[in-house]
Image 1 (tube, rainbow, N blue to C red):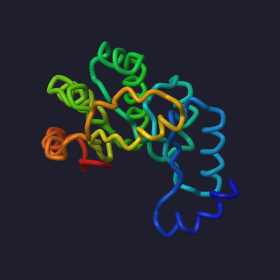
Image 2: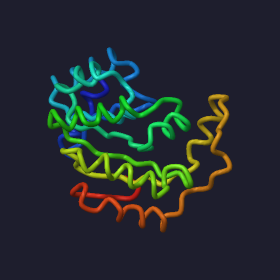
Image 3: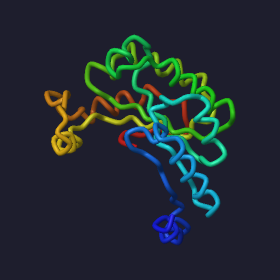
Image 4: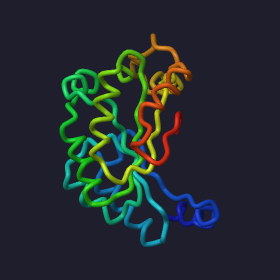
Length: 190
């Protein structure tokens, strides 16, 4: 908390705060919730960047200490979600609906991977899900880029998307328009 305390004047000036991201910050719930709680005790705005794959109980614990959820929504179809991520999306969508039901502020983040998440079927599925969600502050359409490739190399991990190029910005702009009316702000790139 000492490092965060040192930045409080900057947060006050900029309107910023602390965002927990990762991997998945809620995969370490005890640490994440303790840090969020400490931030709130200091009056610091808090956010969690999450894929939504955590138990409802963990989300319940985070609610009093989290001002904003940056929530990834990759694939609407549960079987496709399982195929590409290793888990189905049932719990993820339930958690999104839960956060909405308790009035939390949410930013939806939709990564665009050509031929996987940018299909008409998937975009329509995501639109259908989002049409039932209240509290969406913004939708960020995030074109795929290969900037993380070197991080995988540094960690001696295989980068399985190496044959994908950067997602075309013109295509991202067309998809951005698909989400009109589902949030006050819709952006490409976040």
